[in-house]
Image (tube, rainbow, N blue to C red; front, top):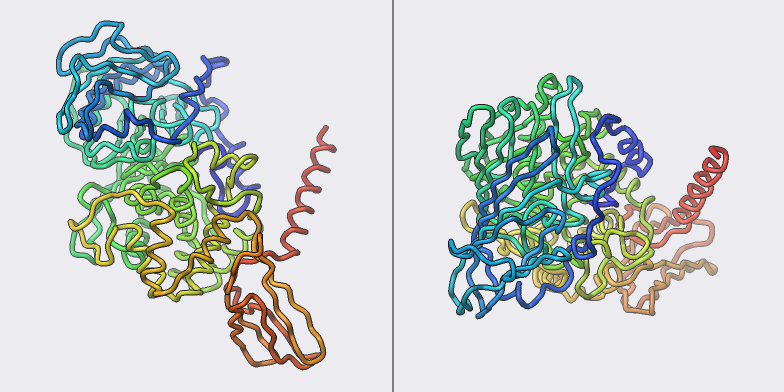
Length: 580
C-alpha cells in the first residue's frame, strides 16, 4: 500500500520489516520531483474523463534493468458516453512522450500537452456520443523509484543474492500514472488490458491475468498477459529469475481455478510451503464470501522485493515466508482478500476506501476462526483494538484524494483497517451471521446468488453498503454507520451502580442516536439490555459480579486502551532520547 500500509500484528513488526529491506536495493541519490498532479490520486473525476468509457488498454513495456529504464507504448481505446473533443489522461511528466497518434494519424506537438502530468490531447475531430477512438502514446525514460515501496509508489530496482535483477512496481498511492497513461481514479478501470513485458532472456515477467504467449527475440523475450477489468493501480510489472509452481483448485462452485506461485530460484522449499496454503484460503473465501472473482484467469502470487500489494491475479508477496502462531501467513491472506474487496468490488471514491481495507483486515481474524476457532479470532481483534486512533472519521462524506485518506495526520490512516475491522465484528454481532454474510455477498457481487459467470467487477460506495445492510437486516441501521463511520470518537458506555441497580448510558459524539443493545453478566445470569433511548437500568445486587459486554461484541471507547497507547508513546519517546 502507500505510506501507511499496516502490519496486522503490530506497528513494531511493521517497522522491523521495513528496516529489514535489502541494503543493496538500487535507489538513485536524486531523482526529479513528482508534480503535484502526479502525487495526487483520485479526487473528483474531471468532466472530460467522465465522458469516456475505457474499453481497452494495450500496454507494451520494454524494461532494461541494467539502465533502470522503461521504453513503453500504450494503445488505449475509448468510447464516448457524451460528445467530447479531448482525451484527458494522467501520466508522470518525467516519463517523456515522444509520439502520439489518434486512430493511426500522428498528432502535431501543439495538439497535446502534459506539463504537470495531466495529459490533454485535442482530438483531430470531435467524438460523437457512442463514437470510438484509439490513441497510441509512445513514452519512456527513468521511471520514479520508490524509496520504501509499497508505502510510496514507483519502481523497485533490486537484486537477488547472486546479483540478478529483481524488479517490481507498486503504484497504489501516487497512482497508475507512474507506470502508464491512465485515468488515475478508482473508476478509471479499462474493460480489458493486454500487457506485453519485454525483458532479458534470463528473466521472467509474471503478470496480471492469463498468459497468452511468450515471444522469443533472441536476447530478450516478451510475455503477453491479458486481464479483464483491472483496477488502475493493479497493473504491475514483476521481473526476476523466477520459477513457478502450478496447480489447480477444484472450486465448490464446480469450476477449476489455476494457481501459480512465482518465486525466486533457490526459494523452492519455502514457496512450496506457502503454495500449500492456497487451496484452504480459496475454500475459506468461497465458503464465507462467494466465488473467486477471477477463476477463469488465475490465483497468482509473485515474490517481490517489497512487502506486498494486491495486484489483481498476481498478488505481490515479500513477507519472507515467516511462521505464525496463527497457523497462516497473514500478509498473503490480507492481499488475497483484496481480490474480493478491491478488485471485484472497487471503491467508487477514495473516501470509500474503508470498503477495501476494513473488510480486507477483518478477513484475517475471520480466517483464524475458520481454521482454529474463537481463540485466534479474538486474539487478532485484540491486537487490532490496541492500534485504533480515532483521530478522524473513517468517511468524510466528500470526494477525496488518496493521500487524504491514508495520511494519519490529515485523515483516518490505519483506522480504515483496524477500526473498520472491529466495526464489522460489531455489525456481525448486531445483525447475525446470516444477514451479515449476505450483506457482504451483495456488496462484493452486486447480487445475493453469485456463481461463476453471473457477475462482473463493479463499483460500490459507502452509501451502497449501508443500503444493503438495511435491506438484508430489515432494519434502519443508519445510526450505526453514522457513529462508526462519520464520527472520529467511539461511543462510550457509562455505567453507574446505585444500590441494587446498574444504570447504563451511551455517551455518543454530538449526542447522536445510538440504540446499541448491550449484554451484561450479573452473577451467573446474562442480560441483554436494549438501550433503545441510550439509557437503561437493570437489577444488579450490590456486591454481585458485573461484567459489561462479556463476549466483546461492541466496539466502544475503553480507557485502558487510551492509557496503553499513551504509555507506548512515552516509551518510544524515552528510547528516542536515549538513542540521541
